[in-house]
Image (cartoon, rainbow, N blue to C red):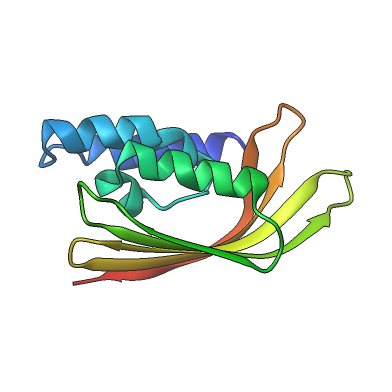
Length: 136
């Protein structure tokens, strides 16, 4: 059941792509694994460049506690802020990371605060999160 819900959310998200450009569809498909894992929001995935999604994945894997990273994409001019709060180990012995991601994409600002744990296969999965809706 745990794995079914993210896939359902992903299919609902991708179903609503009728008004997206081809580039947005490609970005959304490339970013779909991060959405399915709860590491970014569907709204972020629609417009987030693939290299920015890769950077976020890298930071989830390597960032130390109390670390902040900010960057601006030179092509899209979107900017991001990743704050790593704490690293812990859950009851299954998996490493977990609490972080906040702020995305300033176009005229839409969105914040995701989550805790993600590394699964046995090495992939990260959000165990809880809260997303502030995009602002126009």
